[in-house]
Length: 495
Image 1: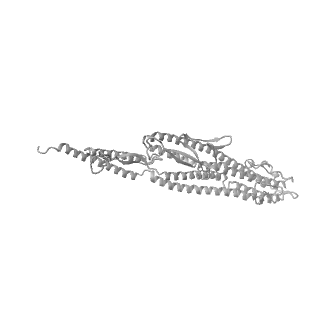
Image 2 (image 1 turned 135 degrees about the vertical axis):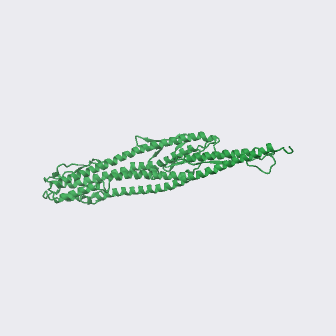
């Protein structure tokens, strides 16, 4: 026979469960603006019905429900959307960093403008043309020397500034590696804390949120993948467990975090290489679009070295050709022209060390040999150097010069090509950054629609749970009246 007090237990469990739901709703509302917080819910479960199936069960028409219990408190999260979010954040981290590094390069090169190298070269060519019309004019000769010094100083400035930014990129890589290692250690620490809670049958939702925030940030720097690690004991089936984290290097998984702890990225100071375990990490092994570290690698080891090399090639070839033509002329004193620029014997670093050798305006070899010193024809040749065509590393006008560092085109077209290539890279990086930002915002919107706290929804839930709590309380009152009738009202017939 069923207990008279069975209904009280049913109502009591209803009150307790709705009370728990009200508390969880209040927790959600309180954390509406907490970064990384995922809304939580109480998973209600029916309690075991009465009677249980057995040989000596009471003979009643069927099993009666005995109420409800709050089985677990679970956060609301979609792992598929999380994976999408991290993948897109990884791409955005790459293109943001790449866009920033190229923007710094564009700011240094400052083209097109009135203050860049192209403008300095144009002013120099123009000063030579002016000199060709009045080769004996001292003022015009001084302008040529001053314009030449301006060109040399611009080369030096560009070389110095690009080298400084490249060194800054190396420091930023060091900081990024340090941050990645710190994140890995923190994720491993949270894994350890979770492993101590889950076996007792609890869901450490706040630890899950903290770990996801760290993994989200880690995805900005490295291409990663994750894998669940179940904990033993009385762990619930819906528990998320620990998280193994892998860095994707050369398309292969390389363990970064597991249940044993975290592995660290390490610099090999003697070679300047970066390793995770036995695997070397470089731009080529990480690949384009795979995190901020990959972009920093590319800018440091490819983009800036290439720009510096092209600037050196331009300065070295320009000075070498200019010197050859200048030496073919004669100065104001009728002496053969001397080397005008000094760039050393190798093109490497030429842009950083180029300088003007002449100090006396009379030494500018503006005239052609065998003619009067004021004819100005050699100055005209010097002014036209920018248009002389280079084929297979040599110029038709200067057959004695072979194997020039610039192999084709003209001096002017070579520099225009360098600037054009930089501009295209910058446009591409900006375009991809914009596209990645838009896509990430869309994914984040979907993510927030699942996990973010909605005050309207929580207020609605609060009213729902409050009414359910009141109904359970009213049920206790009804049962109390029934018991009062049985205890105090029955057996009174005939009195």
